[in-house]
Image 1 (cartoon, rainbow, N blue to C red):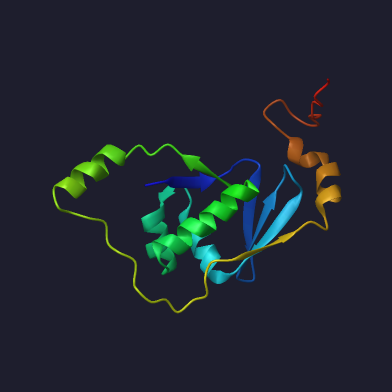
Image 2 (image 1 turned 90 degrees about the vertical axis):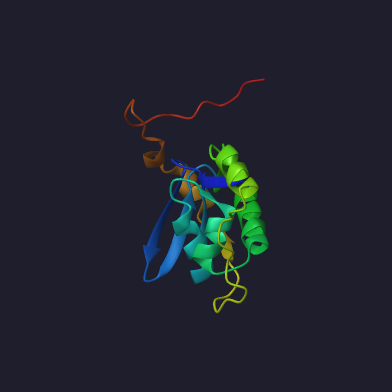
Length: 144
């Protein structure tokens, strides 16, 4: 089972008036998440299995898997090595399983909107290039 985590430190998020806004400093894009997507996003902290994310959001596992695939395609999350795979296989062989998500849900499917309108402005702002070496840190451009 795949495990995902937020693609930090280049991706950050904040909740404003109940709406989650996610910002990708590498691309300059920002995203607005609906409440169901926010539940999945909040549960991603530290890397969480897809089945646990589905339970947290109250949606089916396949819906969460599709949503995470879209987030991964946008570069907002990354796959994390699944350190517990052997433990889960042993538990399944012993006849125990993780709880299934509820069959029905009262919230909309997880979704997000992508906004490119501030892309150039955010990429010009050098503040996101701060690192342990200090500020400003210029980006290295590949030379052919």
